Image 1 (spheres, rainbow, N blue to C red):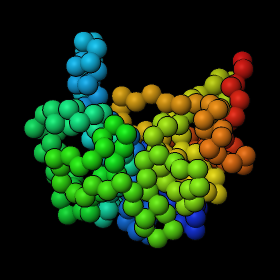
Image 2: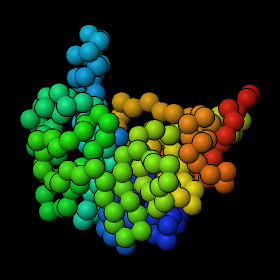
Image 3: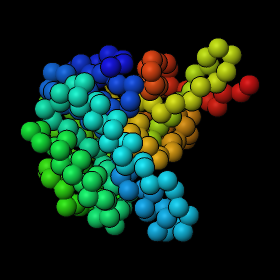
Image 4: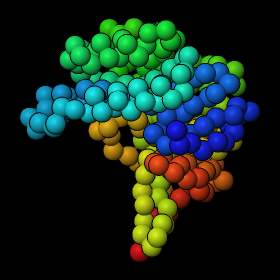
Length: 225
């Protein structure tokens, strides 16, 4: 399991290379923006089919993280389903897979803008959750402190071996932590976007996901070649 250790709001956390957040002291795994059922939603709304494998791929990676951490509690940080119809349309095999992962664990679905309100899945459904010094919600609020959120699907870049590498990334400062999207069919907002630059403090860090998670000062300008 590849990870980067860091501290946030007094909590010792690990940013996993997969894009999941692991809180060892609380046996808690947090993932954001799974967007289960996105291929079904895109095909339904646009008529353009996508290969319908993204939910299975996301579940395979989540299964691996749960096996590696043996997490007692899982928090899904909103936009777990691409919309309400996509949630209802998941194949039975994938619904059973989710049920199997939930077995023996506390499982919390945070409401997102794509999936407001409870869905027909196990676990609890809440708008936000506070655990110790951390508050988990889908979208960052202006006065948030100790806040763990998602929604923006942040990405960041580094220069490696003479070329630019861009990956999904955690963004972290003293007030808030924004998780990357965990789902397979998810785009991303670059860290130098006006939105993320306004949200994050000047000394914010970016932790890029991948086989070797890399922590750098949050890029605030587009890299030129």
